Length: 310
Image 1 (tube, rainbow, N blue to C red):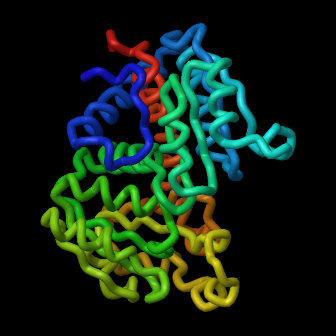
Image 2 (cartoon, helix red, strand yellow):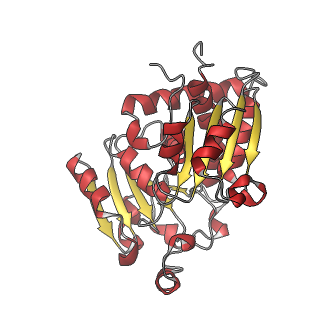
Image 3 (tube, rainbow, N blue to C red):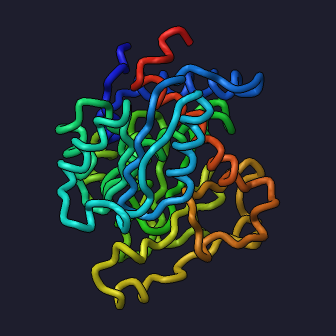
């Protein structure tokens, strides 16, 4: 399986074997990290092009590259870049690839990562493009679930919140279609999962249940994946105000859940998970944050071609 030079733009570009391979490499790297620092990527440079705000994704990519022994350049805001002067995305990418061996890009425009991958000679990894895709978040989500349960097949997974604009749940739903799972889509009517994704899930034989009421389905779930309402992606503030605060997961809500239920969230959260849940046996979202490091180490190392012997 040759990963060197490969772009990671959409979860749709990966087969189940691809995904399982990445998860297995991530697990081995996590174990290696316990023994000390690594130097697989010594002499290699990652460029991070973040046209949108980010904390976890940007820092975990940087941490991943440093833990592989490589270096990082890039920007986390366009304020001090030539983009402010009108430089095109294509010219920015073609410039930055002269300084780096791999590019990670986050951009508010859907399709921006695909465009970057088409023009760049170095591998490009999508760190989120608009409300479209967030493939590395999906991989770390799958890794977190697999580490918690020892499997993904056979689980009942609920996706809660903004299923219309949330790119994390779009990517995750499409990836879960490769597994034998039951999906519960829980959202306000205004924020339902896009119809084409639901149809695709059903065509692949995934049992899908859509509801607006969390309390009706929470006793069934093994995983509850919570998302915030994506205020910044609403075209109309009035539309956002109608659905703000639709759900809050607290200890009372979790009273009817399975003992083994795990609550996940891609973060940042606003008010959809009460802080009292943080210390409960159900909280998995901070372990989820950590998962970003070994998974992104795996992706960086594989696309750079430095993990061939692992």
